[in-house]
Length: 358
Image (cartoon, rainbow, N blue to C red):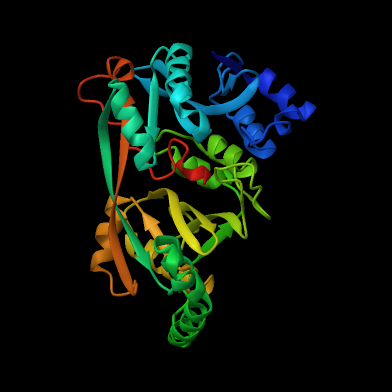
């Protein structure tokens, strides 16, 4: 028989502090990810943050919960994102995934949202029959350097022996690209790169509707889910990377007033833009982005910022070697949708939910 164990803030902190989370065949959470969940400004003390599934005292699966909320007409609607779901393949016939999901629904009264899920997980969510697809986002991924040594073996494992050859080809192609990029101009207007959101930026952000304020975003910058270092093979979700860093960029006019500010996340050469706030001067945003991409030797840049992507398509500054269309789906539990007005659209930015964390 499957038994389930839930952890709220205090219980999760005790679980991590005691080191008990390390006793299993696989890790249900990392220390730094747990601490980030505990520090989540939207997590209440009683919210369930982690659920473990056991079979005969053996850990066979877990699910992570990431509390969030909507404020609609002054009323708070609390819900949670599913941030992780894993079951030991040897025990799938015991259906621990369904048991975990049913427990999550019970803990949050069905107020659950999911995004960035795998095809395998998506099939399970659809089988449950309680989720609906909502608020899809169209995105783009722009490539600026070749990365055949990583991408080809990942898609076609049989080519792994050819990885040294791919590395040589990458070095040659990227060498040519680097020479070409020597001519990339540095923006001729004032901008600053910080490691957090400052008060001036926070005041500017307050002019825009959004799911998160500056304090919340800073909290996640200070408590990341990913650290730089060697991956712990016992944890199967994002935990470590060779390089991982956030950059807060603000663009100022001649009167030193902010016209745009945005958050960038750079992980192992791949760039995201979780948050963007602008008066509409996308040309300057694109010029700063381009110079950042060149100076940091960015391999690829992913954006679901629709207005920005539209301007990039018309820009002569941005010069990717290739681009692809992407789509981000969101699944909402029907119980959550029943609480939302019929016209409601959260207008999620790229980093909302748990997307800015990995």
